[in-house]
Image (cartoon, rainbow, N blue to C red; front, side, top):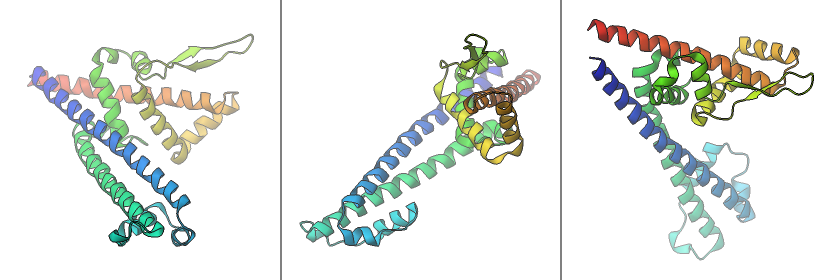
Amino acid sequence: SNRGGRITSFKADFFSSLLRVCRKTAVQARRVALQIIQTTIICAPDRLRDLLRNMTRMQLIRTLAAWRPDLTGFRDVEESYKIALKSLARRYLELHDEVADLDDMIEAIVTDLARYLIACSGIGFTSAAQLLLTAGDNPERLRSEASFAALCGVSSVPASSGKTTRHRLNRSGDRAANSALHIIAIGRLRLDSKTKEYVARRIAQGHSKLEAIRCLKRYIAREVFNIIARRHKQINQAQIAA
């Protein structure tokens, strides 16, 4: 039934949202742990700093986590730094694993709901989850592409002055969805030749790079809307037929 489909969709959206909140807090905590590690190393004795030079982030973290400091020597300056850095590195790795586990769960939910969305260039699981959640929370905004663009905060607002015709970004709307579109846009700009050509063409027409990216986000919102709307129609038709 249609009601059953809505309940299934609601549950999936709810669990995806819940996991994404957990992921966000874990990522924030991991970032804080890394910042404290970096600050602690700066203040550490020269010998320790020299040992830790020229390492990648994960080489550094795993090196610190593998240290075996003398826990009874915590009154010694060097040993106290080793104890602290090992503790912070282990915390970072625990959070790193937690984020990876949550990513796997989010990926499974999004794959069930949106394999048609993540098939598009530059749309990853986290961004797809956010866009689906935004669409699911605001079904009334899926009536038109322009309404969905406004919901995502990528509709343009006239900002002309004198003889110059400009549009600025609409700052209202769902900021998380806007952030997801921005991540997709930057990813495409870095990896997709057609996107690079599109932005270059916009800049050649007199737009700033920020304006060109705004136009790109608007284009991606249109693409996402069409995919979601088409999929909703297919699901509704299948439920009616059943």
